[in-house]
Image 1 (cartoon, rainbow, N blue to C red):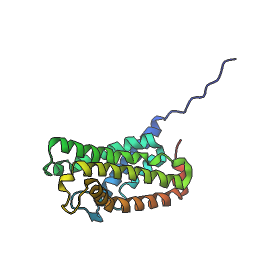
Image 2 (cartoon, one colour):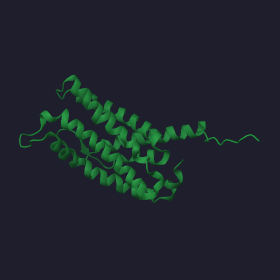
Image 3 (spheres, helix red, strand yellow):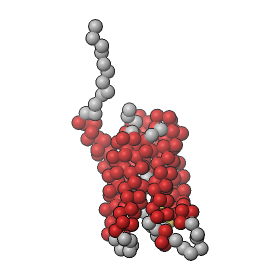
Image 4 (tube, one colour):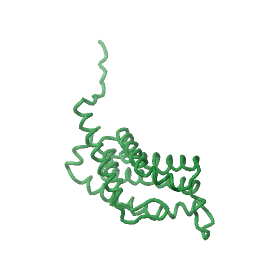
Length: 197
């Protein structure tokens, strides 16, 4: 008797269109929210009204793989928006490339990891969002401790501690707000019903 094999269902054309549309809307929403600053830091970075949440929600609803792709697209949008102003910062070409990689491409792409614990209930969703935010924070610390160490105030002796403190000023409250909002949304039955395998 021939063995029957189960195949994983494939995403239909309609399903892809729905995912792409939702991702595009969330990238646009995240971009608009990123332009609304509650606190603007003098050397880059800002506290926003949960601008990471739309990208995290895509990862939570559609999974980490789709979330990483959407987060990369969002990272490219953020880089394009800030590209011309970044060229005026007086960085060398290698420093500018490192900044683009760590402060934009990696820092925003890791938001796709928000969906990694999505099947573990509300606390898993919060855990995934916190993980994504911590990974983004680490990317900014790497950039701050290397690329931007030359701008460290004289009263600081260690560029890594300075980078951790500087980026923590906006990333800690942003993480708390984003995790709280994700927790609240995870309690909405319509959101839970959207989550796909």
